[in-house]
Amino acid sequence: MTGSVNADVRVVGTAVERPLRADARRNRQRVLEAAAAAFAAEGPAVPLDEIARRAGVGAGTVYRHFPTKEELLAAVLIARMETMLAEVRAALAEPDPGPAFYTFFVTMTVDAQDKMDIAEALTSHGIDIRAATGEIAGQLKGALADLLRRAQEAGAVRADVSVGDLHALVIGAIAAARAAASGDVPRVAGLVADGLRPRPGGSA
Image 1 (cartoon, rainbow, N blue to C red):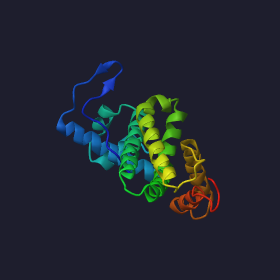
Image 2 (tube, helix red, strand yellow):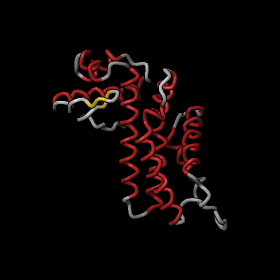
Image 3 (cartoon, helix red, strand yellow):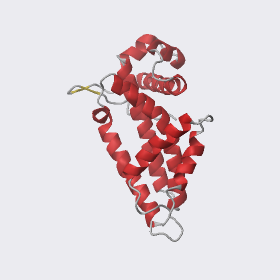
Image 4 (spheres, rainbow, N blue to C red):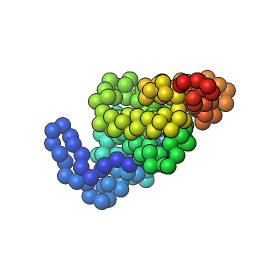
């Protein structure tokens, strides 16, 4: 699943560049979408020239917006996180907190597969993930905490579950699915989610 990034204004170092023209914004978005699809299908090693071909733009257009593979990877990662933030906010607007939480948990786990691959690729190139995604990551964590709290207050999720637990369970579900013959992440995520439900007759 892909997301959109703010292409109007970009900050380079301490200088703010002029807003991109409409055609430049469209090209940048096409590159991001093509890169997200390519990374999801084949992993972060896809060459920039191949991404340009899939986006239907010249290689120079890709390099103009993203001079390095690391910059493109970071932009795709942030776009995925922005999409996830929009999804958790939509879940917060749902009237029934329980189903909204569990639906989002499975979605978050499925989306996290590609996000983890991109993050690992960036880390391997010495990129500080926290520095690159700090603002959006903070917003996402806060919104997820709100979604979890609403579900707990509605009695749909165990009271002893934390946001940190959710992140650990997402990573565990992906690892378990990859180890299984089927590789069915949604199914494994659903099984893990069942463990978050309050125990009959228990306090949690």
